[in-house]
Length: 171
Image (cartoon, rainbow, N blue to C red; front, top):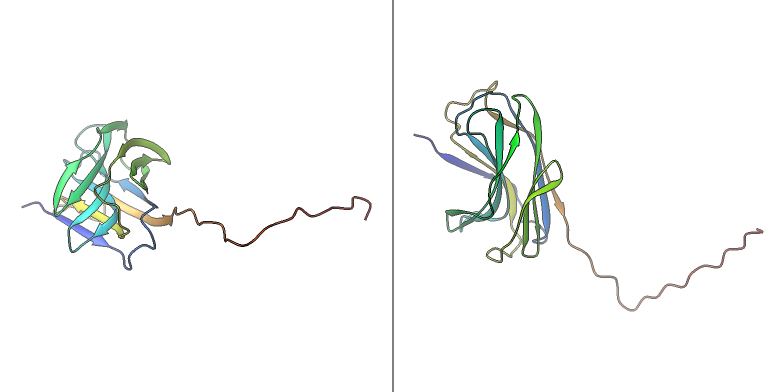
């Protein structure tokens, strides 16, 4: 039977505002329904996270999708976006989470953006794979890079002031 697997990094991110990206390459022209996802704000104990997913049904397209998981129940948030795809091509998928604005990106461009306040706490980042029982080193999705970036805007220190410097152009 097909199954999913969730692989998460440790430790928990310093805050909830983050961008998770991964380079994904699919080596099969027709890998059935296999998909690969990146996750953020993940609480593995509660099976709670946001997820941007590349889904490769059949043919020369791939769909990017955005989900949330609450207590292990996946719910698609926003509509799927279908893009052209060629076997062997590298796609950079992103999951941007800033406050209640959650986006799935492809190549650094938002494809799906929703407002969702169900998961607001910082969590872990990672990947989720589904239906990979027949995958081999030369077929299906492969991740070649996974990164997480802290997007929190730090407040300016209080009690400090800055005075513009006087520049002597003749010096």
